[in-house]
Structures are given as C-alpha cells and as structure tokens.
Image (spheres, rainbow, N blue to C red):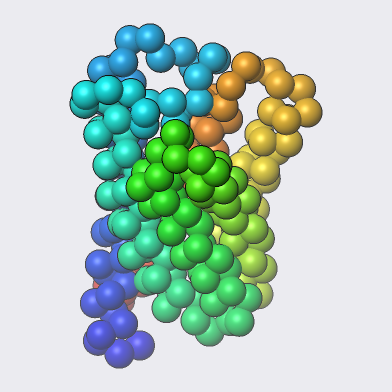
Length: 199
C-alpha cells in the first residue's frame, strides 16, 4: 500500500470514529432542546423541522456526520480493494452516506425528497453490509465477517419488525437502534483500519 493510501486510510479511520460522536451529540442536544419530543410518537426527523436551534442542531448533525461517514466509506473502498465484493459494498456504503447527508439537507417538510433519502439510507446500509460480510469471510477475517453480519441483521430485522407489528407509533426507536448498530460497526472497522495502517 502506497503512502497516499495509508494517509487517506488514517484520515478515514478518524472520520469513522468521529461521525457517530458528532451525530449522537448534536441529535441529543436537539432532543434536549425540544421537550415535546416523544420516543414512541415521533420520528427523529421531526426534530429537523422545529423552530430555532432544534432544527439547526439536528440537520447539521446529520450533514456533518454524513460527510465524515462519506470520508470513512471512501477509505473503506481502499481498505477492501483486493476483492470486487468489497469494492461494491464500499460503493453502496458511499451511496448510503450521501443519502444521510441528504436527510439533513432536505428536512422532513421537503417532500418527497426527505422520504426517499431516509428510505435510501436505511435500505442501502444493510445491503452494503452483506457485500462486506462476504469480503471479510473470503479474506479470513471471520470475526469481522460475523460482526458485520449481525449488524446487518439487526438493522434489517428492526425495520421488518416495525413495519410488521408497529410496536411503536412512529420511527424514532427503530431509527435509533439502526443508527446505534451502524455506529458500533463503523467505529470497530475504523479502529481496524487505523491499526492496519500503523503496521
């Protein structure tokens, strides 16, 4: 691996760690600034159309975190470059991060763009994971492959369960479970990228 790629992998790894921190910090502040928010009655995106600081915190959190996640995903493309399935998975993840940015750029009241961006993010992420599972498995990284598979299943199953049973009235809880799962995976892979570039 040349020095340019090593440098970009380090930047991507740091970005992958920062993305969830930025997202959850600003979303938590947005929730704190809007006392009417209900975990069972609201979608997280409802925060993006409130007045004053709430919408600014929420939308900027998604945009900044999305940009950092995009940098991470481009680094992942290099990290998994040896296998075609890895490159495909990373490319799908790049599309997912662009959808995340779009969710913040086009708030809930910008219809139907916001809806399409939200669906794209939550559909593309687990799809990218399935390609990456195969890549890790074929390269002997069985534990990473298993971990990636579990994350993909959690993200997919929580939405299948939500649409099947409507266990809550709105999307905030399944959105949060999906985001936490995706964040855990991103942080773990980011540390792995940083570890391998240090060798």
